[in-house]
Length: 306
Image (tube, rainbow, N blue to C red; front, side, top):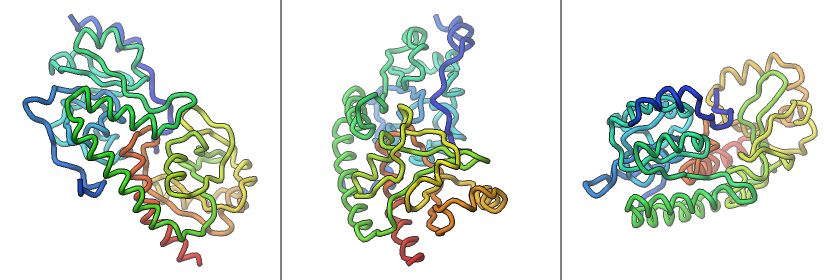
């Protein structure tokens, strides 16, 4: 299942129990080799967004949480086998973390409550993407540049962001002849509800950069998504349904066994594209991966239906 829950809050056990033990020409998607050197600090990445960003910059952190799930849901860049599992995103193993003696710990806002405990181990930096009133992709770029300066890889960051902009321009060209209508972005179809992405999502920023339209304009959470009843999809104007899920067999079974789904205008027209899992809490690397897959799939699907 896709990671549709909000980023978790650290548990009391993690805070108090474990706390007692604490005394350039590159195509994006072809990730750079590790840039770590003796000058690069030892970094503990306790969230997937910061881990993904570090790896995209060529920096390999010491530890990352839930590495197996990262591989399924975040996918790119791959976590090297040298990286240590540090427990759950919501409950990192603080005793193990201390044993690695990191120079810096990077967290996302879901671990803010653990900040006092983590500061007993090493300086802590906050990596933020979703801020009320700000566009996620803009915030992610600023956070990426700030992190790069903090760990001394600003040149690599400048090159990475320049390559990102070039790639996005290329994807926009690939999609300029797409005429399949607005996209209705859904991560899950479960019984009588769906997780849908709206105007303040990371995906919306990508659609804007690519000249595509979002079919859903309803209210969403800080993270840009909302859980809606399937009946709400019936009111969505003519659009292509874009499913973000790797569970294609489950989706096909659901479509054939759920009567209400078969009545949706979105599905009666056959205008559907299925992409693999995407990390919608991610930053610049997640945005690039989503844009790349759209550029690869939408023109083909549109032509097939034409």
